[in-house]
Structure formats: structure tokens, C-alpha cells
Image 1: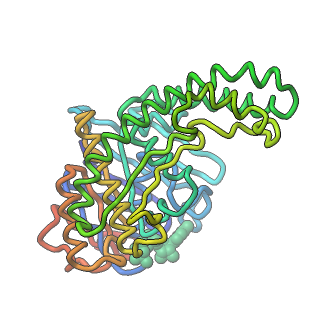
Image 2: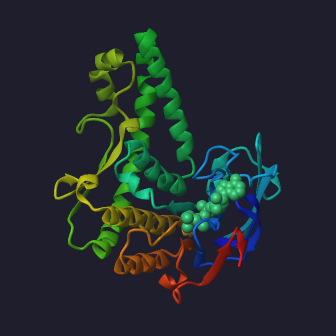
Length: 350
Ligand SMILES: Nc1ncnc2c1ncn2[C@@H]1O[C@H](COP(=O)(O)OP(=O)(O)OP(=O)(O)O)[C@@H](O)[C@H]1O
Ligand SMILES: [Mg+2]
């Protein structure tokens, strides 16, 4: 399971580039501004249908060109999937095996893909929605029907929220659907989180053996209550605030070190290692449950990590069995340890 061919035209400074990556670890190296992150960006777009750097087309399309094109051949379970993306300023076309696709989840099912960038540590101190999204990636890859369940829940909750502003009787009528879907969502998330946490403990022991982590799933409503009871108990408060205050939409992962929230305790490098450990645990779990390997993109691996941690991280990436694309300015950092190296200069292979 890996990309075998990648072809990029007119994405940022890459006018034409084609590579045949290795199934294991691929190092993309070159000077600042040479196009390394842009290459990762194109792979990300093949797996997610969008960029991780820009939601607008204009910055992505090479200056002076009308469109960008990305093509990738991704092999999974002996099937060669051909993915093509064409983006103009006003339109995006995505093809999967010759068919036009409209739902990005079709791409996500085909290519399980994760990314670590120098900003990924923000997962720890940004809002809970980022940590929920992280868990949802995993649950979705284990159970593809999960996204339908989530949609059903959000529809019911939005209807309830709208009714809280105008008609309390109608709001109450949505309680059952909100509670049924919410409980089901939580049980899937909780089961997944339990499995993830076991793998995570192992990773953390390797990365930071001296720190004691306390990692807990908060489901989004009071312990000891069913969601249905919680909705009834908090109905007046929900009416005052005009939104549903309990349910899986409030869930979060709580991470503490020595009883102190991780973002206030851990150094920047430790935060990066923790997020990398979460990511590796997730890739391993996905492989354990689905027997499928994922693609991992790692932008600027070296940033803020000492050589011991860099090498440790690198060996854990390797062990995850994923197809990995790493970027670095200095190829010496990992030379002899990678399966393929690509030197990028001014948006082309050197
Ligand atoms: N729309 C565009 N058209 C042409 N060139 C662009 C466009 N957008 C960005 N660039 C240029 O493309 C280059 C690619 O940037 P990229 O972020 O991929 O570099 P990088 O190799 O990752 O650098 P760094 O080591 O600094 O992270 C930069 O030089 C940037 O100025
Ligand atoms: Mg870069």
C-alpha cells in the first residue's frame, strides 16, 4: 500500500515534477524555498482533496498559470488506484479511477494519510475540536460508516439548537435522536481511544521514559449520567444559552503530566514528540485493525529536535510500516537510513 507514481504540474513553484517513491521511507531534501513542502502538499491533496496550507486555489496555482494538476497511482491490496486532481481558480475536479468524485471521504477511504508539520504540536493547546478531529480520523478509518452516524448526530443537534431559540417543545422532540446517536458515537470513540492509549503508552515510554503521562478521554457529559438524562437535567440551561451543552460535540482528550496540562508543562520539543507519538500510535492501530498501511507526511522533521530524538522518531516511523515522506534541508541528517532520496531545487528534481 503506497504511492508508486506522483506527477505534479504547476503547484506553487513546481512546474513539472515526477517521482516514483519507495514503499518505505522517502527523504525530500533541498534548500529553503526549493519546493519540499509543496511536494508534501500535493501528496496531501491526493489523500484529502484539499491543501493543509491554503483553502484558496490562488496561492496553490503556480503564478502565471491557469490551473494545477496532480496525479498519483496508489496501490492498495493489489489494486492500483489512479487519482487525479485539477484545480483552477474557480473549480476543482477530482477523479478516482476515471470517475469524477464529489465526496472527499471517497479519497480518504482510498488513501489513509496523516501529516506532521512543525505546527502539529498545536494539537495540544488548540480547542478540543482539533483533538476530536484527530480521534475521528482513526475511528473513520476503522469504521467507514462512522461519518454517516456523525452527520446524523450533527443534523439532529443543529435542529435541537435551532429549536432552543424558538420552540422548546420541538427542541425536546430532538432529544432522543441526539441521545441515541451521541451515545453510539461516544462508544465507538471510547473503544478506539482505549486501544490507541495502549499503543500510545508504549510509544511514550520510548520517547519520554521519565515523564508520567495521564491521558484521559472526556466524553462530553457528566460521568454517571446517560446522555438522555444529561439532556433532561440541563434543558433549562440549554434554553438559556441556546445551544446543546452536553454530548459528543464537547468531547476532548485530556493530557496531563504530573497533574499539569501538557501544554503548560512540556517543552516545545516534548510537545512535538508527544504529537508524533499520538500519530505513530494511530498509524499502528489502523494497521492492526484494518491490515492496511497508511501514508505519513512529515514536514521539517529536524525542527527543534535533538539528534537522539530525531533518530528515535525516525526508527518509530520505520516501525509503523507506513510509506513515509520526510522533508529536511540537510540530507546528512538521515543519510543511509532512508529508502529513497529526492533532491529538490527550484521546484524540480536536481
Ligand atoms: N503560487 C505560487 N507560484 C509560484 N511559486 C510559489 C507560489 N507559492 C509559493 N511559491 C514559491 O514556491 C516555493 C516553494 O515553497 P515550499 O514551501 O515548498 O519550500 P520548502 O522547500 O518547503 O522551503 P522551507 O525549507 O523553507 O520550508 C517558495 O520559494 C515560494 O516562494
Ligand atoms: Mg517547507
